[in-house]
Image 1 (cartoon, rainbow, N blue to C red):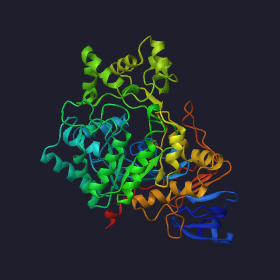
Image 2 (cartoon, one colour; image 1 turned 135 degrees about the horizontal axis):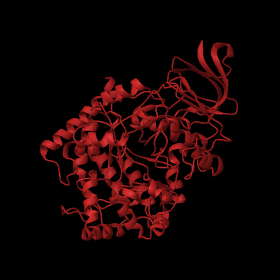
Image 3 (cartoon, helix red, strand yellow; image 1 turned 90 degrees about the vertical axis):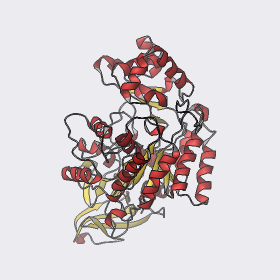
Image 4 (cartoon, rainbow, N blue to C red; image 1 turned 180 degrees about the horizontal axis):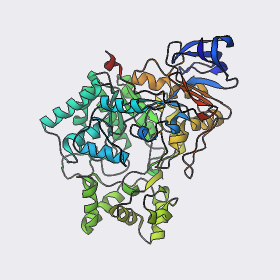
Length: 540
């Protein structure tokens, strides 16, 4: 007897092939059979999905949920929109390997009385699986976590011994089942590293068949006190150089690489650089570099830096405490301001404050940074600086991308779908955590028709699974793990907004994870059937 039988569905199998009518049977956590007219008597539970699409569970190719699971094990934000697997530890930040300042950094991310009692992937996986989680998680080593653990926030090149230590930490993570290494070279202290340093660590990942994901540098080494480096010029029109660095890492390390949460921020860049960037990626693939793209379908991004202002690299050396000290010095503050003004990507009117931590600043939530500055009678940058000194840390979003560029990226055949969000209540207040996948199915498939249904599902499923080398998920075939999402193609849509970001979508009545019914009639069943996935090398 089958455990479940999904009858009368439109099967979109994840390969990009046209849909077909079929029944899908599930037994012992896997897909047992796919064909027409499977007898209802052959299953313990029959679910009529007539008029609905039966698809593989969606992959989120860029997520930040690795620590969020401990507070939100049911992962409602993702599972309710059909996501059954997340690729976590992005932008160079991971929950392993932990040593030195990296331990404190991870503890700070969780907060409260939560005890971080592991240092490596094995320990993390044991802790999470003992608790239980509703979706699958693939992980990677965070370059920033490794560098902080070995070098702290120092702005210099590593010594030979330090580089060897970092290589050993990366190798250990890969041997324990990590899928690759992520970099966030826009962020301190990762932006203190030169490309050659990244390549040396990426070569270690390549030996284990892993991948590299890149939050592109873009702001580079501008006005760097170390001198002698001209990777990027000190302006905002530097997107192409950042993507070139991503390609170079992949090419010289011999490793698949991804331009993560691809975007073209800054009005001065709209419609200008994207065609060149995509051409660079296509040219790289022609010469054998496995470059791909992931993207979330929104025109706003998380506002970078403390309180919506991204400091120059030199100002963050030594960490947050040193940055605050520099802001308190009038001359240094003046210099920081000048550097920021020289490369600001959006107007203050385009930075929306979503939430604040301190009660005395609650009146600023829901206002743009420009509006909040008027309320306080200050210049917008001075407001951001002063709040940082006071220990406030508000979350904000910047409306810095054009819809035309978003559509160009999402249509590209190399693009995979992501959220850049978390699996629990999104404290940042961006609707991408709750609504990215239904938004694509509503906006870009049903309404604007820039993607076919089959191509959209491929981007959400098998494209990601193949990139990561996860060969038993991402496609509906007998023998594959039964990660399945059932949705109504005529009514699926996101409800999350910037004012109500933690709203579940509609039109996704059933989701299975490893054969367990986790969403039933649009309600979470409480099932915790997810797993920490391991790279194939770990199983050899």
